Amino acid sequence: MPIYLNVFNLIINKTAIYEKYAGGVEQFRIDYGIPLSKINHEDDELFSLGQMNADEFDIDSLKSKGLSFDNDKHESDDFTIVSRYGELSWDVKWLKYNRLFAWHIDTSPDLISKMEGICKMRVADIMTEMENGNNVFKTIRLMPL
Image (cartoon, rainbow, N blue to C red; front, side, top):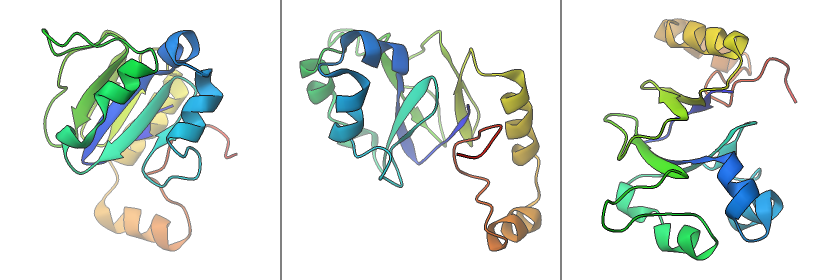
């Protein structure tokens, strides 16, 4: 399910959380205030932590909880940092993104199609949707929760 990008986003493969993070997915949700946060969120395959600046992410905390990060290469297979206005801090094989959304390579084609439709919307149409209570910039799902 595509996740809306904030200015800077630390995107984590949820598989890494299941396999490595001390306390697992439930503890990660508690540690980062998911689902109560308006900035940090998740879909079926990913977690996304948002910040205004890339240097605000606490990578040492993620490492202390079990995720991998190579200090010499400055990269990880478990997560990456995505700038809405730039590039990935380092490439990971499991992530695709554009300027508005990021998604796991296993995301359903129907959800990708829905995301692509949102990306093609005119600003006036987006504003109309928002005024009607439909936030098109939330995590995209086939069926609302």
